Structure formats: C-alpha cells, structure tokens
Length: 638
Image (cartoon, rainbow, N blue to C red; front, side):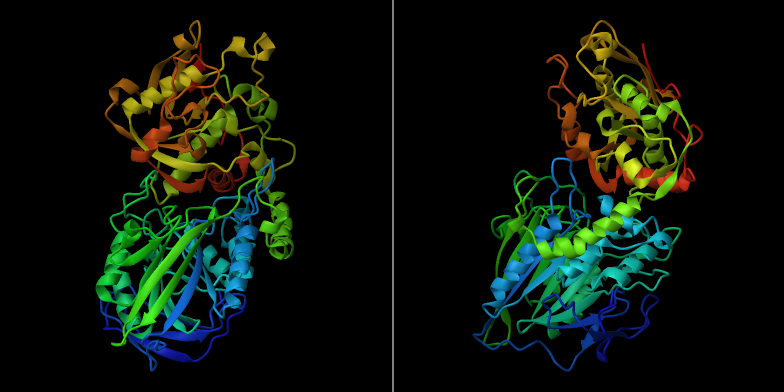
C-alpha cells in the first residue's frame, strides 16, 4: 500500500487493557497521502481494534478547532462495488466507466479549487471481481500481475478505500500483494483480524483537509466473505457495530467529524422500487446507531456491499439513521456519490453539521462522448493495462482432449435441442467449486443455452478461448427453493426446447448457429429427466424427473440450493412470468425474477471465473470426458 507513502514518527497512541485478543499498544504513524488525492495530512492507525475493551487515543492536539460561528465544508465523491468495471467491453461499443469517473473527480476538484476548497475521493469496497480485468490478479499470489482497479484508482486520485468482501475471493495473500504493489492510498478494515499474513491494511485513519480533521473507520462484511479458510485459518470477522463503538469512542474527542466507510450493507428503509438483497442482522442501520450512541460529533456513513441506490436526487429523511446520513451509490460505477458536509462551530465548542448530497450518473454504452472521459487517464493508464490484459488472455489455462461433444459446431447444434457435453462440464464444475464458497455449497447448477459456445481443441486452451466459450460476464445467483418449485422450473424448461421440425435443417425457421432466445437451460448431473415432445410445445412434458437419484415427487417439500446465472435471474428470455419468444402465448415462463426477491441472493462471483478456477485447479488443466465434458443421459428428448 505504501510504495509511495513514507513512514514518519509515531504521533499518537491507543491504550488498551490486556486481553487475549489485544495485549498491545496501538499506535498511529504519519504517512504521505496519495499525491494525486486531496488529503493534506494523513495518519494511519495500527493494531488490534476488535476487543470489547475501551480504547483511548492520546494526542496532544484535539480537533482542528473550528471557532464559534465559523463554518468549514468538506465535499466528498464516493463510489462502491465497481467490481472491476473499469472499461466494459461490448461488441456494440465499450463503456469507459473509470475514465468517466475520473473526469467527474477532476472537474469537481478544479471547480472546488477555484473556491479554495478540496474534494475527497473515496471507494467503499469491492473494487475487484466481476470482469476480465480480474485475470491480471491471477488465481493466487504466485501468478499475480497487478490489481488493475487499485492502480487506476491511484492514478485517478483516490484518497482512501475499504476492504470489500470480494477483495478476499482469491485469498488474503493475493490481496496483500495487490495493496502493497498498486494502492497509493490506505485500505481500511477494522473488524477483520488474525491473518497469518502481515496484511497491509489499517483499521482506521485520521486525515486533514480544508482545515477539518476527519476520523475514518473501515468496516467489512463478515457475510459471504472468505474467512477462516484453509489457506488463512486465523482470519476472522468481528461484529462491525461493536468495533465501531470502540473506534468512535477513541477518535471522536480528537477529530471534527467521523466518516464510516462501511462495506457491510444497507438494511434501513429503502427507496420505492428497490429490494432488500440481504437479510442483515447487523448492517448500516446498527452501525449508525452504535456510532451515534457513542459520540455527538458529526458522523457520516458511506456504504457498499448491497449495491443500493440511495439519495439519488438529494439526501432523504429515510436514509438518515440516528442522525447519521447513510449514503450508497449503486454498483459498477454507474453513479458517483456527491455529498458536502458543512461544519459550524457553536459557543459551547461543539459542532453542528448540515448535509447536501446527490448521485451523479455516468453514461452507458453509446451515450458517452470523448468530452465525458479523462483522456489522459485512458491513454496513459488504462490503455497500457489493457495491453497487459490482452497478453494475459493469451496465456494457457489448460488443454482440451479431442472430444466431439465440446467442438464448437457440435455445441452450437446441441445447445437448444437437448443434452450438451460442454454444458454438463460447466454446471458440474459450478457445483464442485461451490464447496469452497463462503456462501456454502449448492445442490445444483443451471445455465442457459444462449450463453455458451464450443471450444477450439487445437493447442492450448487460453483465457481468451474460454471467454469465447462463455462471452458474457454472468454472475451467480443462489436460489433456495423447494422440490415442488424445482419441478415447476424443469417442467417449464421442457417446453422451451427447440423441436426438430423448427430447425432450418428440417425446413423450419430456426438456425441453431444464431441466437435463439427461448431460455432453454442445462442442469448439473443431480437433475435427470426426459422431455416428451408430443405434437407441439403445448403438449411437451417433462417426465421421470429425479433429483439426486430420488423421484422429484418424493422431495417436493425438501429445500435445495440452485445456482442460476444473472441473465435468467434478471428475468431475461421469458423468466419473468411472461411470454416466451417463439412459443404459443398460452405458455408463460417461470418467474425466476419474481422469486429472486424472496428466495435468492447474488454471490457476485462470475460463472465463467469459477469454471476457469475449476479447470486450473480441480481438473488439473484438462477439459476431457474424464473431467466432466461428456454426455451422460441426464436429459433425453423423445
């Protein structure tokens, strides 16, 4: 983290009672802020903060001393959950999210500088995992190349970030390398502790800007996070609300305001039309309440993890919890949060705060112009990294044993009409890899026919080749459903199969070489059934359905966990309860989108990324009949 940050003398200390968790003096040291950021001075806190013992902070200087009647403003731009959406590549045109964000930051800072003000730029976690840029991370610390998000954010002038749960998807050792090599800013987390590695993160920081001293607290979700893994068994997560109390009690007397960077998740009142994605026992609501209970100093909570869009057109009363405004800016860099905090001194020495905020949208595909982009960042930082990414995509991840079932023309002809060897491989790989997920293993996996192609069997299998097999960045949703619901889904799927008479080879209108958006899905090996075509789609039936070897009617009340991709989870191809393209209007698709609200959650893991991990690790670099690329009769069309 500090390749450009120089350590200085110890300037303050924390004192704690001796406990099993914390029997040390906690200290802070002065470091040089990101030279492209806005912080004028920066102090990094070191040590253990997860004990329930009270912390005290010993500093000769208290707050910056805003005089009675005096007002000072702090403006903050914030993003969260960009998930490596630096540039979104698409055959119809790329979207330069990070160049747009950097342009917003630069323009805002230029405007503020003319008034003698400064603008902080913060990221609230999950910078990684979600696009091809993650391939530069490698599969572990041993083949790490770079963290493209941290490198680009450093160049864009980021002042501080927090560890998101997905930062740990590839292990704590890799995250340590990413921070050390590519983050020119502090990366915070106060409630993760015990790694066997010397993690270069910090629990909290104190920074000064525009004459205001700010205490920064970083918090990370302990839900869906790789903790206490075989590779790092000591890394544990602790209650973020309790840790917040510890730090706020220590920081508040010495700062003018506190910024909580919370990648824990929003669980307060939602704007109309938004769904609660997680059932959080402890979330931003409890953290805000805990902080307000400890201190009357102005507190602002900047959030992430739940991808919630809050305060789009201004700070709303419902997102102010216990006098603490809670902000969040959606996902993937589609918005930049913009909030100004004005602090005013009172006669009794206390401070009052007023807040103004909104979200600034970035522009989607086909709508951005060159004027919307930070051209310097794109040309001098992003484009050179893209060259390295292209080289990475040409690296081998394994080999394909000659097998008619995975050759492209065979996959194209199979995918809409019945069983597919490559789909069998993919779905079984997801079930196997799920054993390592922090969200727990799944029973079955499903994938839609339009999202896959075959593989070239000549020479090495490269990252780029597999990206052609799976060209879409589908995320994995886990549904918890009953056997009865699973039966309905399978019955719905049977009606979606393309019938022989519909194919162009038989005089029909449908060419399997083209996109047939009927939503036909393939399943992992635990689901087996027959499709009886009948006279037409209305008469098509799923028969002899078995689930893990048992007739489905024997497990109708049993609960199962099923992995679906985000494309169908979002209701595409007739999975929102409506019409299915190409089928009689009497046939309505199963409403996976509607079911998602109550029975599913997004892991934010990439379907294809998990399969690449399976090829490299579980299949030992070989795609063959022996590693799962085979027909096994799991679906028979009659």
